[in-house]
Length: 459
Image (cartoon, rainbow, N blue to C red; front, side):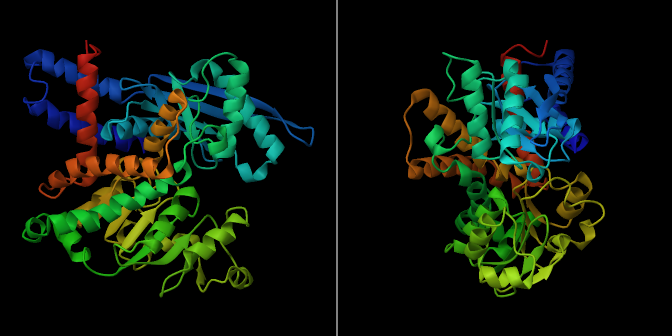
């Protein structure tokens, strides 16, 4: 996935190199050298920090757990990115996720750089006491590179507000007398977190889809209807009709996205399928998402996996394999699980014509190219799932000011920010043959390149 991101950024830089209206002060050999510098800077992280956390378990055993904190680029501000708790975490993955955070913040004009962390564990295999120790050890091992003006972690897959509360408490203990509220975001409201932060990513994911299929399609109907652009044709084919929706992943992002889709009165959605790490649930007439959210909350985050559990949840559904959701005959597929879900193996079986990336990097380059050539609309991760980092920025601001916003103020600022980005990108997307991902990358690279040039970092 890292190679895919680097490749798209390189394409963006090549396009900008040929456009002499961009950074016009750079001409001739100087321009070539500056863009060579940009490619080197953006394709590599500033620092990679790795440690093995020494953690005593309740059994008396001591384990050594690989963990990472990657700093990709801080030209726009302090490093920012979540800490992933998952057994598949590896150095290459964390580097790529940090890279994507740099691009995401640049795209949405959020004054943060890109960072990311990871701990190689399955959190379900540890007790609460052991997870607390792991969080404390992570802060102790990486304390020298963390801080509200240097690197600000947040939750990611497998972690949440509880873990951020624990980590901030340890940071405060180590750095007595120093500002600490902005050292971690995604905390509980009682511990200085922001109202709306937990739901922010899922709400933002659904908003990008709703805005494109609803507001934008209606406001530009005349122009889009007469367009030869393949993505405009797809948009208008699906803009004014009932939509069958599937959501892969039922964690924090997926469950909120599914609820938003099920409750939306603006579009004619019907959520017919959801999945998690164990199972896909399908019902042609639409699933009771609220009942599934309530059941999973009391079942360690897992969906029902048997007829008995479905009955307990009060939900009508057929039980399918977890992979089946990707190839179901639906109109819209939200990807809110892990990386590499749509790939060379299954790309030809994907039936959804609109794909929204709630997860980071869920579509490989092969699948992205294949689907885009067929006119499939793919709303990419750096556009769709930025709600978390946008509200993390608002949380960081509130911590510095010790003044807190209402949930309405938070959501208004979140949606205004995402609407502004969409309004900048969509006219270009629906008027040229480039996929939306490429348009997003070009926009992000323009901002990063301009700032790096103005800061004198290309020489």
